[in-house]
Image 1 (tube, one colour):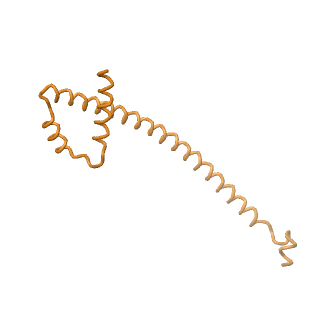
Image 2 (cartoon, rainbow, N blue to C red):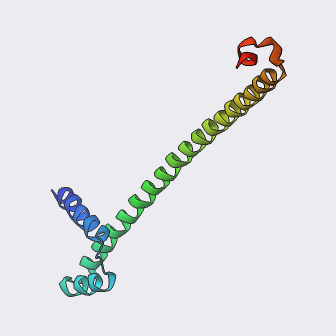
Image 3 (cartoon, one colour):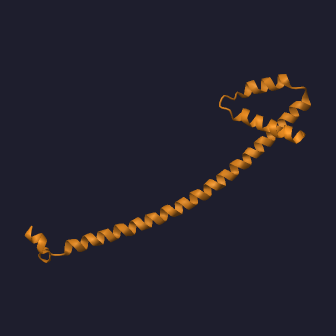
Length: 112
């Protein structure tokens, strides 16, 4: 039962800390006024510490995931660059071939 209260308390704490209007000084002032003593403050500190550790783990996981996606994207870009270079080279060869054909071989072009 205490675990459920801790989970809901942690969830409430997380929402409070993540809110855009969170003010640390006001939070600490209210916490110290509502506190029943040292033990209450220590428990609250432990909840904040647990939340900080969870956040750090999530951050590490996200960094690793983003790094993997970055590497995969870089490989794909490299492959596409190679394909574009080959295509450009083929187009240049085609243009040179077409320009080297004498106009006399193209009767329709000569008549126009």
